[in-house]
Length: 116
Figure 1 (cartoon, rainbow, N blue to C red):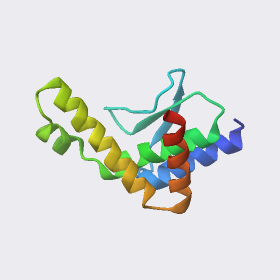
Figure 2 (cartoon, one colour):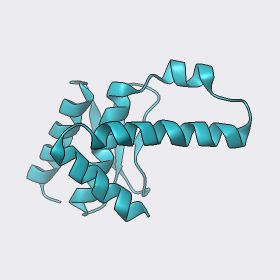
Figure 3 (cartoon, rainbow, N blue to C red):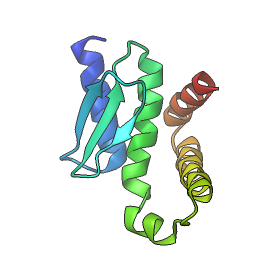
């Protein structure tokens, strides 16, 4: 991925998240993540730009539309139930992303299909 593509992905994620002070970092792990401290999104180090865009879009929607305090307040204590609860929250964010902008929907659809 070249610098121009990298900057474009970071700019889109910042715009969708609404966080101007957002940091976007790359890691060797093959997953997307959000830091519990500050506004940091981690993306997997891959050359698959469409996959990065889809995952970045979902992470941005997480920052904009997910409230960690409310999520934790209602999370079940049972481990299996909590895993299901967390997965449903992720699906909610993906559904919001799919309904937002056409380009975001294309990116997220690509990510979801790749993860099947």
